[in-house]
Length: 268
Image 1: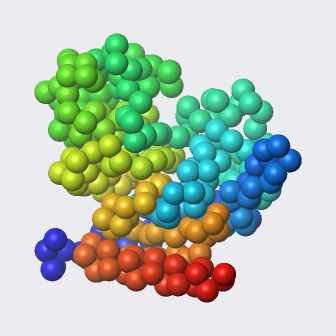
Image 2: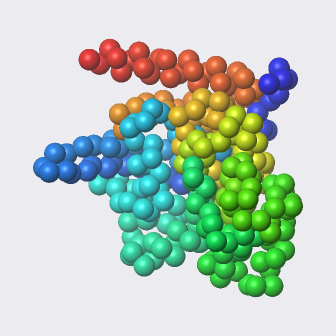
């Protein structure tokens, strides 16, 4: 990483919260045993930002993403997305809201193997009821942006993992969601493909996308604007990138993780 590589310019003009969590909690019950997966978590995600949720396996970050994705319901607190309190929506309304307001990038791509790359992208737009006359242009626009134009006729099994994940990114952004949720998106990629994907996410952010990414990887986190560091279901620390380079932010994240680890060890 170059010494003079700087973080994106401040976008204070875009500081309208897309996502707002207030005192969110999630408790699971199994055979009478209660497990608190998320404890009193509050934060906002501003429009046009790239925010990471970090923590070791079991820290609650995937549970939190599922709550935001409306795949699960919180035991307490409120979640507002694009100004809508999710608790006020019926099950039928939640499905439509998820379709219209959220984009998803998963670790295992979640592409349909029987459809071509082009058809996978078209399907997301068709489900959202995008006019047929517009779909071709949207697909070709984002395919060109993400460097996958030459593989649109191929099936997922015929392209690399990195290309499949870029297709997943194109599918997520093509519907113009209010928020893109990325759950460990580099987990199945080699280092070079992971770097390309993270640069793609940074580019999408520059194009106006709002991204919330769960990751345990410090290098992936260093591409974000802000990191929410979780431990044992709690939000322990918020780390701002500011004007730091990725290398300096990487170091700041490592230092913060060490400090949180030391504090939690002293709790015992």
